[in-house]
Image 1 (tube, helix red, strand yellow):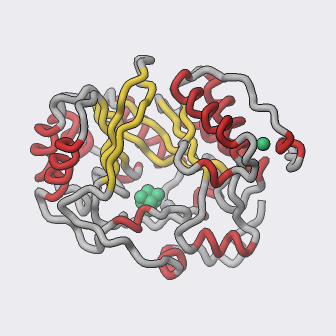
Image 2: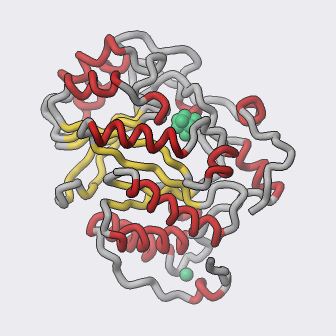
Image 3: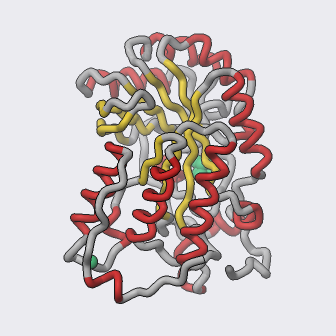
Amino acid sequence: MSKNDEGFINSKWIVSNRGKKNIVDPRRPYAWLVEKERTASGKIEDTAIIFLTNSECPFHCLMCDLWKNTTDKPVPVGAIPDQIEWALAQMTEVKHLKLYNSGSFFDERAIPEDDYKRIAVLLENFDTVIVESHPKLINEKSLRFRDMLKPELEIAIGLEIAHPEILKMLNKQMTLEDFSHATTFLTKNKILTRAFILLRPPFLSESEGVYWAKKSIDFAFDNGVECCTIIPVRAGNGAMELLMGKGDFNLPSINSLETVLEYGIGLNAGRVFADVWDLGLFSNCKKCIDQRINRITAMNLSQNITNQIRCTCIFSKPEKGF
Ligand code: SF4
Ligand SMILES: [Zn+2]
């Protein structure tokens, strides 16, 4: 593990290395999609994701590029329900919905509490609604929103990594205790939680990245989380490219993602998914990439460990284990 000896990683440095934001419309989500997901009850069902256009998250995490589709100022009261209403009118009926707002649902600057009622009415036909939040913004407000909702509420929280020093370097401005505090509070109040876990954030070698992703899954489940999603870390926000140039960051390999997914599923402690977005980035082998993506997708849905892909590429990059 290399060290951030210069201590240069802070919000100012991260923000100063950004490119331009995309042009977004506060009355429209910047994207939406429907995908299959295995539910907590074990069924494979369509789940919609609405990527809400919202004001920029006040935290400036080192690896985050979600600011690209955000506004500089808070969106007006009514904008978020309008976006949800518009997106729901575009899609076929599904039972599960993720509302991702490039920040924290419970951040007053992001989604005003005055909008909760209308949002709850729009969501009354769903079985499950999943929102995301920084652990420090989870409190009684989350319970007030839950109480207005007909569907079951699940909250996704970025644990990122259970390595306290690396977590600090990510500028997430939270500790492992903050995460535990939030999940304990939600579990006590019968709200399901899922954790986002990073595979190979900066300052870790490939084998350290795998080791700490596994440890992070352990930590999440030990803290009452029901579902973990492993996210292979990408560049793309300016700061990460600079770290890559310095040798402080490298993309993880798709093989490592499979290894961590196998580990998580094998624990049998809850659902474990791998993020499948743009997985081609994490492989140099054209021969097996499609098979690997299919394998990961199948494991996500079945929660069973399937046969490993045999390909000559695994011999070209030997990895040291822990
Ligand atoms: S808390 Fe989440 S949305 Fe906010 S900067 Fe960090 S990773 Fe991005
Ligand atoms: Zn290969």
